[in-house]
Image (cartoon, rainbow over the protein chains, first blue to last red):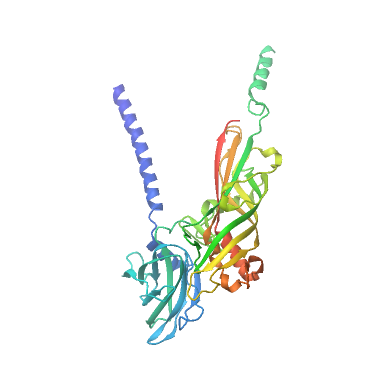
Length: 170
Length: 274
């Protein structure tokens, strides 16, 4: 009888410990689910916001569209075939950059010598939120690039960028 | 009567056991401060690359350190805030950090410490430094006098602050673009910028009867290479040199803001008996 009571107490005690571990694990899971895509959803919806105006040609001084953890609203201007334009993008890191656009606006990325930088992948839409219209992944080094938008019928496009693997090195 | 005397004697012996222990304080702080430079992956064979396509070769990066402080509060203040309603000076709060109006990303714990520090009375222990280490050397910094003999009264540890004065730079800047915006041989970079800022880091723990009195506070300051990203060196260059002293007010303000973003403070506490 005594033995049964001890075993019951032991099982109850171990059960309590186990339940605590599960909670901790759940909590940890919640804090490790952040991804570039989830960050982009938040910033596209909630900001902070920064306004940038694209230039009609790439030869002059271009506004920098690289603002970390920010939705950059890029005002597009008249170009051949509709709306579009150029901004600069000062990359402060090295690796795969995610460019999240609020709409599926055509995007080209040019390096310092004006050559096209290959876009590694493009995804239209997002399963996570409706704020992402298109996602482009491209490998960049530290330095200044040119972003070419359009042609499109949109007068503005929102941009959030994230550097893979660095999204939480704040 | 004899019984009351015995109780009184026992009380006298037992109650002040901690306070009268060889005259030790509730807390005895020993500080160490080190400062270094993080190239943040920017260092290539030709120097540090910036986001504006310049290359900076540094000879010296001298940071004037003024003092370190250890701040306690008399009450265990754990002021919290609602991320949906950020405190003054902050915008969006999410994922454990808030966006400060000056562009910094600040952890919730540091904001809570900041709020607590402003709300509670306590002690501020000041460790003078008065040194200007070259961050490229990455060494421990010589310390000066410490207020109150570095002794803390009872209370709750809240923050460690590090007061920074000036940043002096010497080196050379080159351009990677074609055509080059600078002479092919580059230009010397010199000058000093007044930062006059205090970095802060949250700490926790209690100073009191039940806690080890020895408190080693190890402060580590790192400055990161992206601090030079804000400067368009060709636009501010003179004929023979690029001087930080010649920056316009707006360029200086941008540079100072960027430097502040790229300075990080790590604090490690070790507790031990004296």
